[in-house]
Each structure stands twice: as C-alpha cells, then as structure tokens.
Length: 123
Image (tube, rainbow, N blue to C red; front, side, top):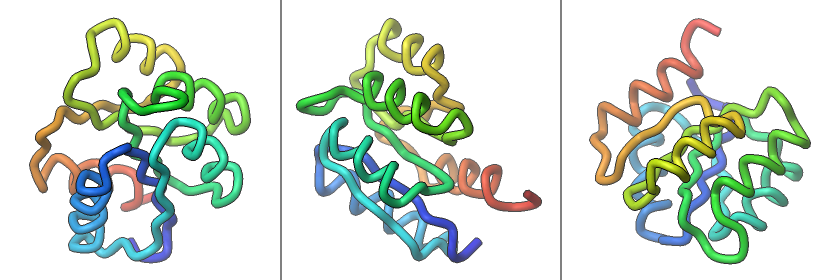
C-alpha cells in the first residue's frame, strides 16, 4: 500500500478524520474527501480513486444515489459502505447499486484494515 487514492465520503468531519487515521496507519497516504453525495460524485470523477468509503445518510444526495451515479461513470468503482443508521432497505439498495462491502459504525481498526488489505494487497 502507499500511493493508492482513497475517497472518504461522510458528512461528519470527525468520521472522515477517523477513517483517514486508520488508513494512514495501514500505509495509505493519498486521500480525497466529500461531505455529501454530490461532492462524492464530483470528487470521484476528479480523482478517480481506487477505493471509496461511502456513508449512506448524507445531505444533498445520499450514499445510495452517489453510488448509483459513480457506478454510471465507472462500472469498476470499488465502493465500501460505512454507515451506522442505514436501514436494511438502504443497505440492500447500496449493494444493488454496486457497493462491494459494508462496515457498520462504530467500526474497528481491524475491519477497516481488512478492507484496505483486501483491496490493495496482492492485486
């Protein structure tokens, strides 16, 4: 791991910071951030990251809408939903739209580390 770009989409600055801190400890250095679904779509198109952490409940556009639009732009987008309050319906919709994985908040260091390892090691 090292130079891969990660896009972190969450309306909470604290949540974005926590994810960055964990990813840094795992050796990732390159981040883009978004505070809502619309910013997530724009940031994805601009940065074309190799991994996206996406909250579901965000203003302007929610995570499900953002996933749909990102996947329309890039079918290979690797998106992991990180959410606490996503209903089963929202989660199901996120998976149907192409999310690869789901992590429940509050998450553990090892849950995020596993996703990073699975995505970036041995590619």
